[in-house]
Image 1: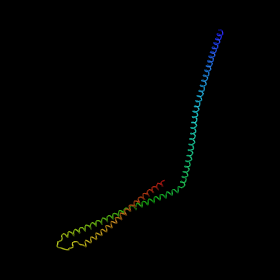
Image 2 (image 1 turned 60 degrees about the vertical axis):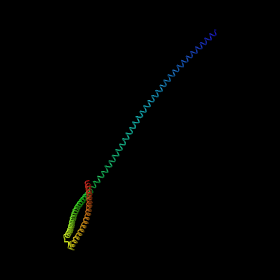
Image 3 (image 1 turned 90 degrees about the vertical axis):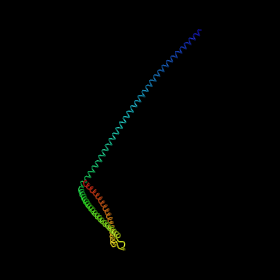
Length: 261
């Protein structure tokens, strides 16, 4: 019984020691876990803050870099614009100076050739006077041609009218003679035979006069046609002369403008 009690006590003590050790180890492990957990949270927080600060710093540096690049490009473009503007101004000044020197040289040559210009002006004035005189002469000739043409046409028309009147009179005389002969034949007695009612000689004379008049009428018609052709040619020549006169007028005006210049 003592051994059993001793063994029981020993077992109770061993069990109590094991329980105490278990709880002690559990407490130690939990304490170490909490310490490691808090340390890891602290480390993670520090690392995340470091990464955020680094990213913020990178963004600020990027923004500053972009601003610097923008300002630098702006400055570079402005400098290039200034250089280009200065170069263009220099080129413009040099070109204007060259043109001015050329104009000055030209003015000097013109001033040197003033006598030649005066002589050319005198020649042009003489040429204008000569052309004006020729134009007046041609105008007078054209007026004279038109007057002569009108007179000749009037004469031909009057002669043609006279010939037509003569022809009508001859036709009327022949008709009257025929009617008189017919009336004499109708009024003659029926017993008279082989009485010459119509004067054959007079009829032949009238016939020959009629033929002569027709011949003269044909001649006058041909003359009238020839005169019409001549009239058309004269009108054509007058048109050409008027066109040439207009051209000469324009040339005279051009010469006068040249003299004025």
